[in-house]
Image (cartoon, rainbow, N blue to C red; front, side, top):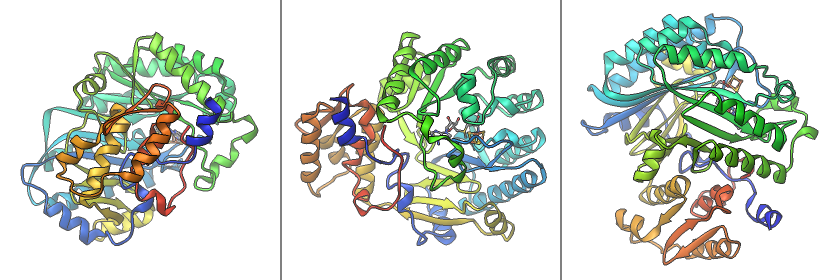
Amino acid sequence: MKNDLLEHYGGAVPRYTSYPTAPHFHDGVNAGTYTDWLGGLDQGTTLSLYLHVPFCQHMCWYCGCHTKITARYDPIQRYARSLVGEIELVAAALGARRRVSHIHWGGGTPTTLAAADFTTLMARLGTHFDTLADSEIAIEVDPRTLDPEMVSALAKSGVNRVSLGIQDFDPGVQRAINRIQPLAETETRVGWLRDAGITNISFDLMYGLPAQTVHSVRGTVDLAVGMQPNRLSVFGYAHVPWMKSHQRMIDTAALGDANARMDQAAAIAERLEEHGYQQIGLDHFARADDDLSLSLKAGTLRRNFQGYTTDFAPTLIGLGASAIGNLPAGYAQNDPAIGRYEAEISAGRLATVRGIATTDEDRLRRQIIESLMCSLQADLAAIGAEHKWAGQRFGPERLRLQDMAAHGIVELNDGHILITEAGRPFVRAVAAVFDTYIQSGAGTHSRAV
Ligand SMILES: C[S@@+](CC[C@H](N)C(=O)[O-])C[C@H]1O[C@@H](n2cnc3c(N)ncnc32)[C@H](O)[C@@H]1O
Ligand code: SF4
């Protein structure tokens, strides 16, 4: 049965951190479009900010993130100045001070910024935006390169959530991915963060990496849980060497097949549940008292480019090379090339190079996809009514869902779709039923499992 499901639904599908997804963005959306969209936002709207820092000190061979390895600081300092410039340009296009409920620093490794530059950037955000008192201010951290000065800068700037890259604690796996990260080092960094008052700690783990086994991933879970993180993200390794050439360093003979990946994912989920963590959607786990668990229960869980989130802001502003903004009118992405991004900003222009204006139908389908990805269910009639949708009744989609129901991965009840526990690994495939763009074939995605 497992092989049958993998064969039917284990193919390449997007992760649906947006809809329409990034391969469908086009250059018809440019800096002019984005400036108009920013200027057209409601005065009272609350914003969420994402800042991308595309630098790391060492290359992990599995890495799928938008980053660049640099041993010198001057490129990072130049980039930090461009971020300041972009903050000024965006603030000018917005035309008025706005409230901010979430700030997320991602990468790459944002803590490659010098503590002083990070502090300056946070202060500059404070000059242009009113950060709400209970805002979440989160940052992605590589424990191997975190130092006490940065920990202190994070705490003083109000950072209240940190996610640490771990992946796997097995020394053999660490060698196979070029990421040597002793347990004691990570334990020390977690201690520093907690001592500084940053107590919301998330870990990133991975499965499907070379040399991983069910036994090794269970061992990693036990060691990770020993540090009592509030949340964990568990990502299946996306092997896309045609997009990320350094992944060719990975020994493909040491990679498990789809069955092995599914077994590893199941072993991690089972072990985390034994340790009291609740599975959230596709790839997150949280303690029962964590905001993610509470928002899943309250039906307010959302999905954005960072994965699952409690972020309720209707508008996300992306800052930095490759960053994507999500506005009511559509998505806008900055130039991923660091040099071109910096050149545009220093010339006083926003660096938008592509995006997509969203239609009413896109927004309807996005809500269905987000509901499936977050709560593993969707009520087509209720969502349709919310969007005053008078269009088609999802005939072709219903046919494909019936096939999925016959395989036991969904249960259908008069327009209500419920993804079963057996179907959880295939949630992306169920969401893809509602993706009208995927039919066009643009974009190459990693496998669903
Ligand atoms: C920006 S990194 C986290 C912060 C920091 N750079 C680090 O690695 O410690 C985001 C996370 O994406 C995940 N990741 C990176 N490459 C991936 C890939 N090819 N497939 C799946 N997940 C990946 C890893 O779990 C990684 O921790
Ligand atoms: S996984 Fe993190 S530290 Fe490693 S190269 Fe990617 S972004 Fe950098």
